[in-house]
Image 1 (cartoon, one colour):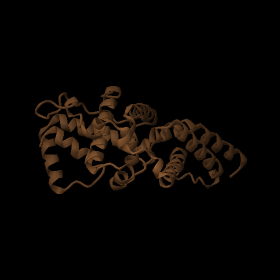
Image 2: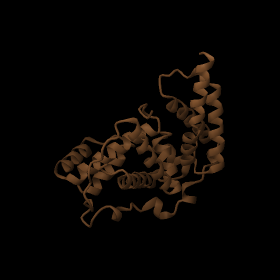
Image 3: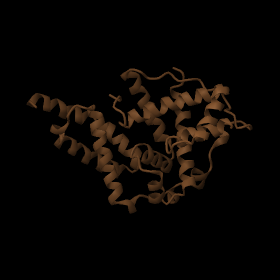
Image 4: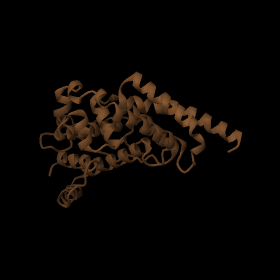
Length: 192
Length: 61
């Protein structure tokens, strides 16, 4: 790799810092830990940039490093992950929120228009922005659990064990997170 | 099966494989319910974009 292309990759990595930080904060929900893991990720990406093969996008590569770092935090400091029951109000764990969405016959209370699929990169970035804002709005425990499942790809059994959640409570949390995300995106993306 | 029941299956499908019976019930309900077809399409756009955002697929740029 010649010096010029190295400089370009460094710049590109540096430009990903806000993306990395936002995702770290969404997962950890703790500014200090999010800052630490962001810093570690940026340092690791800079140090390892010669190993970046270009088989994936740089964004994907850097987010994979962040994911690995967060899984590492998770494995080594399991006891520092707050128990879900300590932080989630009972209704966040148990209520399904069905009345917000369905009528008395359990039918969708309002029509559901298909969304346009963001096909190009600009539209996809717009969708990502909405998605990020909507994930930020999820209650803290719900958001953390949602990303443990969807991003870290921990199994439901692992998440239940780590957070001392029952399988039923986990299922409700994931369901509510997905339902709330759908509704939030609907309001902001809709049938554009 | 109600609309609410279908949303549980759509969510569960992210975490486990649905049984043949569940899949049949789901497609039977979707065939006759426009709102659930709309919601189901929205969920599939949502999950596809979420996977891209989380760099699980590489079309996020």
